[in-house]
Every structure is written in C-alpha cells, then in structure tokens.
Length: 152
Image 1 (cartoon, helix red, strand yellow):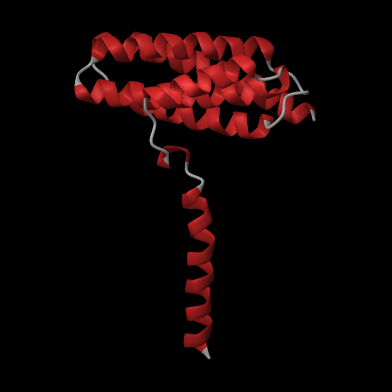
Image 2: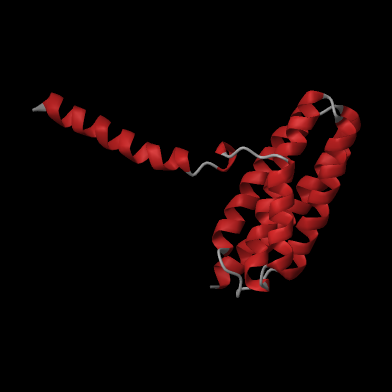
C-alpha cells in the first residue's frame, strides 16, 4: 500500500507542476515584432486594459534588454531600459481599481522586478545606476498595482 500511495503522490505532483511551467512568463519567445505588436495593441486598448498591457510590454522590453546586455549591445539595452522606466511611470500614475487583470499585471511587474534585480547584480559598475533606477520605477509601479489589488 505504501508504494501505491507514493506513486500516486508522484503523479499528482507532476500533474500540478506542468500547468505552472506552461504559464511561465519567460517561456514565450520575445522579439522586436512582438513588442511592436503589443505597442500597437496598447494604443487601441481601452483604459481598463492598459495597465496589464503596459506590464506585459515592460516585461518584454526587460527580457530583450537582458539578452542585449548578454550579447554586449549595451547601447540598445540601455535604450530599452529607459523605455521601461517611462512605461513603469505611466503605470504608476494611471493604475486604478477599474483595471482588468490587475492582479496579473501586479504579478508580472513583480516578476520583472525580480529579473531586473538579477540584471543589477550581473551588470557592470557603469550600468548599475540605470538598472537600479529602472528597478526602482518598476517597484513603484508594482507597489501601486498591489495597493489597488488590496483595495478591491
């Protein structure tokens, strides 16, 4: 009976782990076309959808920026981090309790902050100030979104 219980437990854990991996924000392939498509979608989106779309855009820009830093394309990476700062500031100023998928936006911003923290520790001394500023902006947007989630 002990082996059967242990086998069932292993199968149950495996079944629970598969959906969590499928929803990983880093599992998508992100490139310039997906970013441009998201930016055009954002321009046409109603205000209640914009918070999540901005969070998605921030995440995608951060991921591409990290790849560019790894490839040694520092100028392109810093340009994208400045865009991340601008979009994070917009979220911070516009977030409200009327936004759809607010909790998803908050989770995505938190994940992006985690990724930026990793980049901060891996970046050169010259780039750390920009990465730290970007991390601060994303944390402020995350905090604003989290406060709205708790108000609901």
